[in-house]
Length: 561
Ligand SMILES: Nc1nc2c(ncn2[C@@H]2O[C@H](COP(=O)(O)OP(=O)(O)OP(=O)(O)O)[C@@H](O)[C@H]2O)c(=O)[nH]1
Ligand SMILES: [Mg+2]
Image (cartoon, rainbow, N blue to C red; front, top):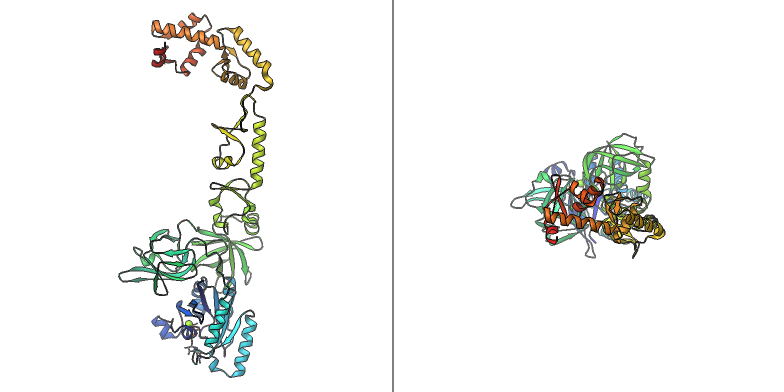
């Protein structure tokens, strides 16, 4: 697994010389770096270990004015190479860099006590002891870049520290923070960075965030050699045709479309080196970016960072908070939170598995930025997630509603919610049209047999006169069984009477070609309202069509007549 090791340590303590002794490469390339004898920008070199493994080295500047550059260099690394001058011992940026490494969660590494050739044995021994106290968990190696003493031993110590390091989250979608970009003649813009996760290869379509600029990768190099695909953990150089250098600078992220949020806010769990007050103005370092921000404290341990410019992060990322010095850091809990100051919300999102915050269906997409992977402890249907308890509760609720539905139509309307189509098939109900039933349920008249018989008797007795219906459910049920005909919402007539009325209508229309309400009323010898209800029903059934105050048969009915 490809790993990156990053230097750390106070100015002039010998980082760049040590990197040159280890790799053969002078990473102080800039004329100004050579003239002043200090590192200003990040330097990169490949490091071969005895066993053939190849690490990438990031050399950082030690000057206190360039700590932000150091943070940008340190964000992508897997282990550190802390450099302490044997004669000087730990100095301010030794401590500050070490603190930054801890805030970034980089726990493993090696300490090189440098310039061993320049001090006597006693001083060297003391320096090694001091270093051991400073970083108790790491191997300490005394070295000299000038004479080469200890360099092989240091390589061995680095190999041991690299053993068993796993990059967490590297299976995720493609994410690379640009640490350098430059223009090559005939090629265009090239960006370099450590591939945090995913893969990258020629032809990939990615997005530069936060601008949203779409790019297509032309080629990918790892340590100056073209590769088909680079994998997470590798330092890569990506050529991006059609992109201006100004469109992909240090701090920008090259990511898979839609896979990471771009946000002006981050909810973090704070890790304070010194108390950070509510409202404090800080610089937030995230990836290789740094952005001015205000700290809005939430509860005792959390904060919402409100940023002056958007950044790309993922849950679990570490960020560093600095003012003129390093104040602390944060672990991202929610990389795209709403504007809030809600302890309860943070408590849930931070402490509980995200699944525990889900009950009724929510779109899976709404959770992905606060999830570490697939949601656990939740049920899924289509693009929705919800809790098992909720599903059982919902099933019970529907069953109760169905059971208390009218027996003449023992179903309930489908809930009209976006997730219905995905979630309902999980439940043991039968869908007929827009309603849900128990499987195989048939309509029955239930306890209302007498009532039904009475209604049918009433209708028979009423002849051609419409009878007012008291029980709509029952009327629908009887109509479906062919035992009556409903007129409008509130009336009904017997089937026989309806046939007689229809016969009268058809024969009148056959001879007179049309019929009026008055004529129909006279023919049937009923009241105006009853005639009207019947004619409306004929209209509804598609038998007649209104033309002014008369009706004519529709063509299909006319032919049958
Ligand atoms: N005697 C001796 N001097 C050394 C050794 N390594 C570095 N130096 C001296 O220390 C100076 C600074 O070394 P660098 O490697 O540039 O220091 P650095 O830590 O990279 O400094 P910054 O990048 O500016 O933080 C060099 O110019 C050398 O004069 C060493 O092993 N022995
Ligand atoms: Mg240097």
